[in-house]
Amino acid sequence: MTFSIHGLAVGGGIAIGRAVVVAASRVNVAHYFIEPGDVREEIERIRCARDVVIDEIHRMQESILLMGPKDAPHELKALLDVHLMLLQDEELVKGVKDAITDRLYNAEWALLTQLEVISRQFDEMEDEYLRERKADLEQIVEKLLRVMQGQTNATMGKLSALVQRKPAQSTQDGLDVSLVLVAHDLSPADMLEFKQGIFTGFVTDVGGKTSHTAIVARSMGIPAVVGARASSQLVRQDDWIIIDGDAGVVVVDPSPTILAEYQLKQRQFIQNRLQLSDVRDLPAVTLDGQVIHLLANIERPDDTAAAMASGAVGVGLFRSEFLFMGRLDQLPDEDEQYQAYRLAVEGMQGLPVTIRTVDVGADKPLDGSLKLESHLNPALGLRAIRWSLTDPPMFLTQLRAILRAAAHGPVKMLIPMLAHLNEIRQTRALLAQAKLELEQSGQPFGEIELGAMIEIPAAALTLKVFLKYFDFLSIGTNDLIQYTLAIDRADESVSHLYDPAHPAVLRLVADTIAEGLAQGKEVSVCGEMAGDVNMTRLLLGLGLRSFSMHPSQILTVKQAVLNADVGQLQSWAQTVLAHEEPATLLAG
Ligand code: PEP
Ligand code: MG
Image (cartoon, rainbow, N blue to C red; front, side):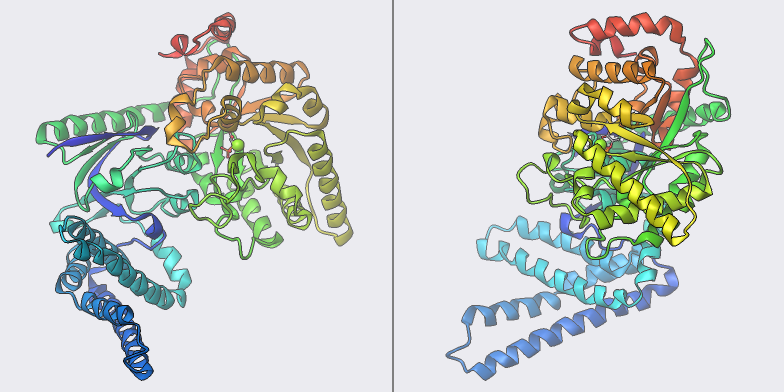
């Protein structure tokens, strides 16, 4: 039966494919297709893992026997029996083998797929005792995964290569089938793992439009919907689903008529994208001759390829924290960072690269997990520059690495989340120290421009201080909106209040642009507002000349720039600012 689920639009067009439903705790398990010739080996991996777990259970049973019947906890014995039974369950074993043989899923993925199928059957059972056996099944699968991870850890390099391995489609039933991932939640780090992966669309139950998970999905330029509550429960493994990333709708089990309608929409979307590529090589100049800088936001050094392909004139935001996420135990050292930044600089072939110092915390936890920091209000807690300043050796390491990369091409350094003069002074002092250390050690480094992110209202309201100490400003509208309107950008339950066109937000953005320009300083916007084509004319009218966004958005914004007459937009922009409901003037 066809039904739809509504969530928040992340963009990217239409995806149509089979659902791969993944439990939240399992998203970082590798998902990839194996070669037909590797089927036996893959089944063998599962078999070996099963033998290890069965052995483990037998050993535990023996030790219980040794305890003597009166000391042996009765429940434990029964539990082990259930676990053994589940490990030999025909349906589990057959389903896993079938997924490996027929669909060419890797062993872990096949196991999770079958877990999902059987779990649902348990959910539907009337008998409470049987229903509760689902937890046992999950434990068994967890054990198998752990054993297999042990096997894979020995070939860790292989694993990460496999996660990236491409075929975008499976050959299920001999047909090419796109796959779309449905999960309760994905951390930004998990989402990044799926970049260039096998999924052609994403749906998550939670998350806001400008959560970092949504941002990474947007950077991939593929259809995604976040905040589609309960989708991971309503959608079943293998359901056909349509993701309309622009409308924020997920259609499950579409009827032939609906499917045909979306296939048409999909073709139109692809056609529009193709047409847009005509403007790729045109300079971004308005009708009245204003040159506009369209820059790229990137997460990893190899994203510079997409940035160059989109015609970006530089990187306006390199979110360096993606090098740090999931590395809590061992943060990247100076050389590793230097190599990464240098790769980005070289990738941009002489165009400027703006590297933002690490911005972890809130919805970008350092351990790469989904759980937010344990503080009460993580978005207001120890994140970004606040975190960097608590650990000067770590921060100095990053500053030196960035300075060294600047020897290879133009680099700008951007500091996130500043609000206090004290933070500015400490940052500048550490930067001076980093330079001194490099001089003393004879390491070559380059000069950089230093910029501040304006993303806390306090910064926007004390701009004079920032203009005194920084060469340029970059407005982080994602956080500026979050902190001005007091709504968590990652929380879908307040996403209806996340309003880029709120008069208070526009006032702060407008004043920052105006004051910066009056002082002859470059001002850019690097939050999602820069890539939102509904905002392009307003930002141009307010005087903005530098926009940084995902490479996938550049051509659409360039099209709007080419059709804009800044002279005419200036007075209209002032009308919008003065309006009590600016959004009504912005659409279209
Ligand atoms: C912003 O806040 O607008 C920004 C660009 O930084 P991030 O989204 O990484 O917080
Ligand atoms: Mg920010």
